[in-house]
Image 1: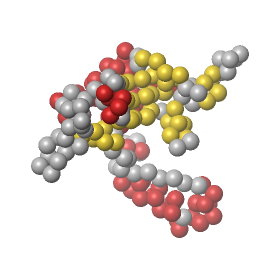
Image 2: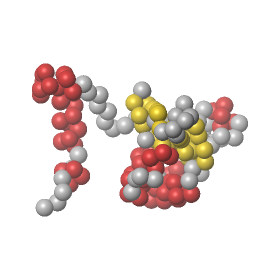
Image 3: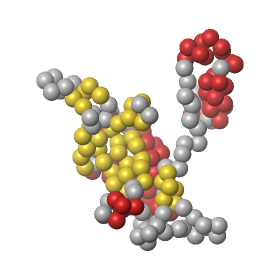
Image 4: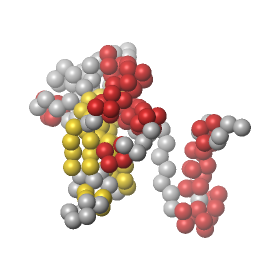
Length: 173
């Protein structure tokens, strides 16, 4: 079971930097974001990490984004929440931290009407929804091994790789 604490000062600084650089509409509409550090379960005797801080659909996750319910917003909780794996945070470069929090902020989408005006919730706060990933691929490697390029997993992974600019995963010569 994970435990939670306040975000570190450097995590808060990176979050603010990414909001200002890439998520100006969230800033302009004064969307509030709770950033929380999550810590995985540790063995009582050895102190060794025995389970990851965060999971999504049963898999370890390095961060999670959620839009806060209307009831919790009414109780004073921020409009949305990002939890990050504080056990791993210190091992990442500043560029990786920026990419991670930029990714999580990208999940928060303002709800707009047909004219592009931001809708409000029952509390008069900007209405938000969770934006899904542009791509999601689940795969069984044994299926790829047995069926090769005909496996749906292989086709999905190949399509995803074709969409990523080569400069991202290949060193420049």
